[in-house]
Length: 317
Image (cartoon, rainbow, N blue to C red; front, side):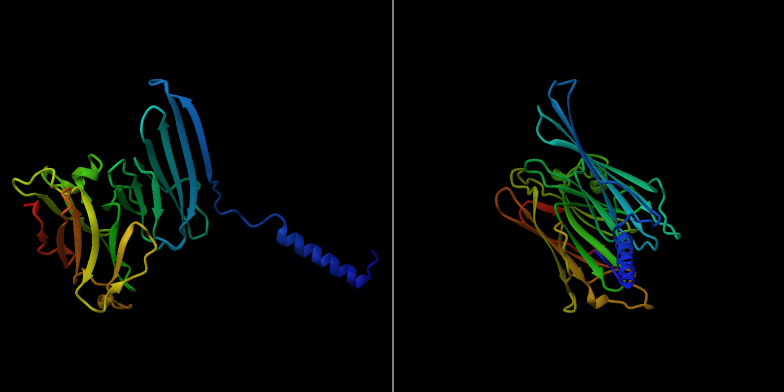
C-alpha cells in the first residue's frame, strides 16, 4: 500500500494512539488484590469421611463509605468446611480493612482485621458491615452489625431489622427482635439477655457509638411451653408525624427504612442529639397459631412504655 507523506504521518499517529489506549498501563499501582476461590477435599482423620474445605476471597472498594476522605478497601474471606458424614457446614468469615492515605496509597498489610465464627455471609453498607450466620432447619439466621474499624458488634438481629434515619444529618438507628432460641451461645447470648434466664425474646434499639437498649420479654407464670412463640412474624415502624415516610431500601435484610423528615436538619444546624416520635411494632408467631403483638414507642433514644397483647408473654422485670 502506497501512502503519501501526510497519510503516513496520520497512520503513525493513529498507531501511537492505539498503543497508548490499549497497551500496558504505566500509571503507579496504588493497591492490588486478587479475588480467588479454591476447594480442597481430604479425608477427616477422626471419622474417615470426606472433608471439603472451600475458601472464597473477594475485594471490595468502599471509597464512598464510612465517611473516609482517602478511601477504604475491604478483603472478605469466607471459609467453609463440609464433612460428608454430618449435616450442615462450618464457616468462618474474616474482614480485613485497608485504609487509604493522603498520598492515595494504601497500607501493604490490613489496618484492621475482624473474624466472625459461624458467619457465612458478609454485606457492606455505608457506615457499617454485617456478618450473617445461617440458621439450620427451623432456626432463623442471626446477624451481627459492626462499625468499620471495630471488632465488637454494636447491634444484633434475627433474619431482618428496621432502620431509622434523619436526612442531611447522617444519623441512623436500628431496631430488631432477637429470639433466644435463634441466638448463638455466649458471649452473644449474654450480651443480649444478660443474667435473665427466663427471657425468650428481646427488642433491641441502637446505633454506632451509643449503648444498646434492650427490652426483654419472658413467659407469663403458668404459660404452656408449647404455646410460647419462638419466631418473629413481622417487624414494622410507625411514626407520629405525617411528614415522615418510608425511605429507599435495597437491602433484603432491612424490613423497613423510616425517614424522619420531621427532624430533618441542614448544616450548620447540628443533628438531633436524640430521636423520638416513632414506635416499633412486632408480632410473634405462636405455636398455637395465635400471634402476640408488642408496640414500643421510642422517646429520646430510649424505650417508652410497651404495650404487649397476648396470652403467654410479658415484659421482663
